[in-house]
Amino acid sequence: MTKNEERSYLKEMALEVDGFVDGLEKAAGVKFKLPFDYKQMCICGLGASAIAGDIVADTILTRWNIPIRVIRSTAIPNWVNEDTLVIALSHSGNTKEALMMYDHAKAKRCRIIVMASGGELTDRCMKDGNMLIEMPAGIQPRSAAGYMIGYLLNIIESGGGPRVNSELKDLIPSLRTYKESIWMHNTESRAKHIAEKLRGTVPVIYASSPLSACAVRFRQQINENAKMIAFNGMITELEHSDIAGWSSAQTMCKPVLVYEEGASDTVIGTVNRMANILRSYGSEPEIIMISGKTALERSLRAVMLGDYVSLFLASMNRVDPMDVSSIKSFKHLLSTLLEQKGL
Image (cartoon, rainbow, N blue to C red):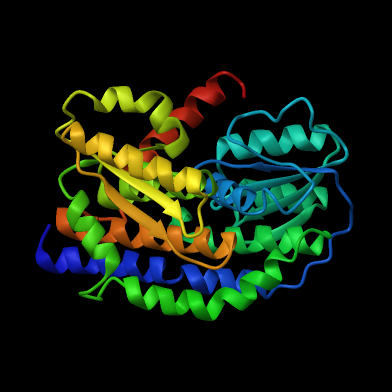
C-alpha cells in the first residue's frame, strides 16, 4: 500500500468513526410513538448490530424492570411470545441470521421493529406492516453503532422506560469535547498512547461488568480496523480462571484492564491485585479507567476510546481499516450453505 493509499483509507474510516456522536444525536432527536406495549425485549442481530444491543442492555441493567436479551443465532428463544418486542437489526438488511430470526418472530406474532438501511429485511418489514427505522446507507456497518445505540435508547424511553434518551441528548456536548481529546489527529491523544502500548501484541481486554459489552466492541474494532487478533473477557472471571493461563510467560499477549470511574472497592481491589499478579508473571498490564458521571456516559466514552485506539493501530500497522473482504467471503459461504440446507 502506498502512502497516499494509506492516508486515503485512514481518512475515510476516520470520518466514519468521527460520526459516532453525530449518529447518537440524530437518533436521539427522532420522535417515536410505539403502537404497542411489551413485557420483555429481544434484540436480534450479529456483529456491530448485536453489540449495540449489549451496550444498551448493560447501561440500563439496574434502571429498568423489563428484561433485555440479545440473540446472535438463526432462531429466537422459546420464551419469546406475543408480549415480546423483537428488534431485528441488520445494517445491510441482508444478514441471513437476522432474516431467519425475523421470520421466527413473525410466526410467534411478536411486536416487531426493524432497523436496517435497506435489503430483504426492509422489504419484509414493509410488506408485513411492521415498524421500520431506516439506517444510513453507504457506511461500514460497525460505523452505524451510534445510530443503533441512539435508536435503541430512544425506543426504550418512548415505550415508557427510563429517561435514557433524554440523558443521551444532554450528554452530546460533553461527548463532543471528549472526542476532541482522543481525536485521530491529536498528537497528545490518550488513544494514541494506548495504541502504542498495544502495537505488535495480542491484546486481551478485560473489563468490569458494566463495561463488558464495550470490551467486546473494543476487540471487534481492533479485529476489523487494525487487522489484529484480540480477545476479551471480564475482570471478575480473570481471577477465577484466566489468571492460571497468564502464569506461564505470554510474550505476545498484552493484558488490558478496563474499569469505570466510581467502581466499587471490590472491583478496584481486584484490578490492583490482578495487575500485581500479572506483573509477577512478566506481563505488564495496560490499565484504563473510564471517566463519566453516569453509566451511559462511561459506556459511550469507552466505545469512542476503543474505536480511536483501533484507528491508530491501523495506521501503525499500515493496513486498510475499510477492508472487510475476509468477512464478506465468510458471509457468502455461510449464506450458500444455509441455502443448500433450505434455510
